[in-house]
Image (cartoon, rainbow, N blue to C red; front, side):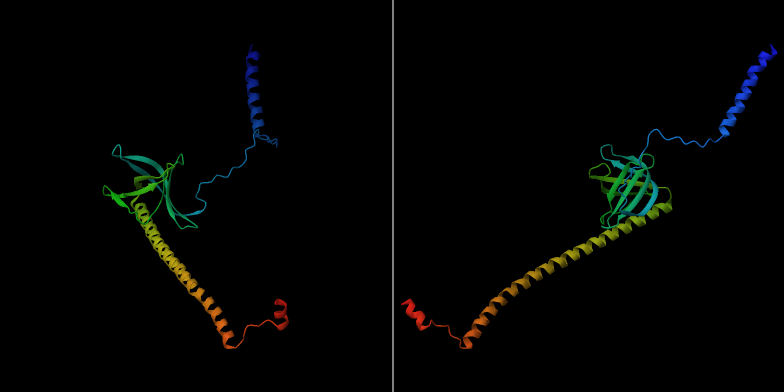
Length: 225
């Protein structure tokens, strides 16, 4: 009876020791994966843009129908400048889902205002494209600290001023281009009569030199008769 009771205990201990030895043992075998996954390049649409600002924030939008503020999302807000066009847009994605909750250009006409006297929140109007179509939205953003709120305001206003300067420079360049085209057209019109005057000068030179038109010879006159 005693031996029969001790046998199961001995076998359990042995199995436990063997399992530990098997765990520590490295066979060096390589197991190939059942399914091979290929790497896929994920495009965020921000590859051709430089990051001017990147910080965490909470975004709200004003619901006109309900006449109240609704939370749009908590995540990262960025100011991105395109490398070729120089245009700057504001983009904000939710932290967990990465869903876009704000996406619009910063224009020279935009300005920030304090919300309810808070030194961490700013309000502004924008034509947003985060839902796949252009919509006039009233946004309110709340930053984590007063320092971040100041940085956001300074960068936002700096970008708006730069866009105003670039638009003015573009208008001046367009005006100078139109004036240049007009001047070229006027010069072309002035050059046309010069060619006619050259032809007239050649005719006058021939008449002054005394050259007479050639008359047919007597043999040619007889043949014609």
